[in-house]
Image (cartoon, rainbow, N blue to C red):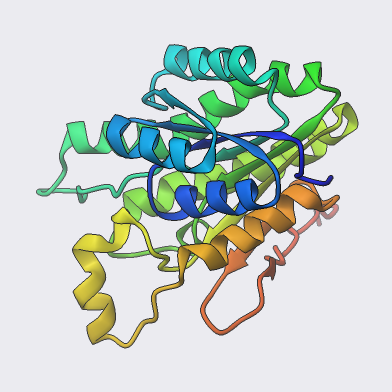
Length: 248
């Protein structure tokens, strides 16, 4: 699929990876709609790219449905969807558990993808098909001990994408995930100094955007592409589960 002359909806597009993806798409001739809770920054990015802005909290199903409807009305439809909005967890398990922080993290990071797919599918099918890319994380491919809740919701996104990809490809809709390491975004701000002290490089958001464009333009579906510093991006090779054997 060529992204030129297509309509793309990008959640969390006001900053970080979402902004980089929206910019890369616009540079390739895509008409972009930014969906974000940050109305000031979101509107500014949309104006700079010649696109549209819709204020929405992706953890709310009705707001997701409304956002897709508004984008369709303003831009004539939707062909590409980047479900990128995400937040850090901000809570541990045990004495540090914060129910509100937990609900917020699961609502944005997991529900935001589930609701986004649900809202976008009718619009994509109405155009004869399209592509969805969800932002997961390396934390969705391996356990991240210092933030197990974040790792849990990103694992869920990976599992959703792997299941939806084969299920929807016959209907002309491809679903994939991008799984970056520590990439430039608001999420890493609280740990930026710690990452630097450990010598861990921060991946430019533009590098992640390149992989998202690859997923939009390719023919793959149900794949989870990692983005890691110093390595070319490629699909993560999941090991197959052991098959059943006769008892005895």
